[in-house]
Length: 261
Image (cartoon, rainbow, N blue to C red):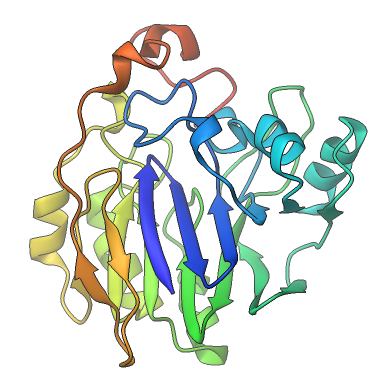
């Protein structure tokens, strides 16, 4: 399985012909590595409905026909918007797909979609190509982050560290210990001023897991061993010329995107 960090909390997981896109906030994301018309997923997974995670799901799903997997209330909203290929698990539910599966697990956060649908946030445990990735979603620190590994060994954790709307880098150090992944990729930081933080400081404080700080567009390529091999992307140019400025997707120039921590 290959993992590519596309910016903020958006990742692409791929193995063979299967391409999973998680939380596709691309258009309007000043740190995005690609635009919404530059991805071609077979599946789209949502952790929750805030605007910086819901993102471009409607546009991408309608263009590609990708199967969308989201907690039941989000799934119903997607269906109401004319997206037919939708799976609607709840927390604890598992959806199988070609080459793998995804299970929804708890996350401590809030969530309302841009249209006003209240929904329960989730983390995603994804198995693809024999590797298991745990995207924690947006969450605060809580002890049940240790539970997914009791069922499945976690190869890679995708972990928010930006603070303010989620746990900060200090709590994320403890979260990394609880999750117990072989490797940790920090995300959900530096996109907007309230979530600016020092990812290298987070890396230096984590023990027991290898921390890989990736630039948007960077990723991990598949390995024949039980660990993935790092392939770091070069720093990406500022996308403000291609995408709306932060002020256009935020309640003001200092705050979060509309409807979304």
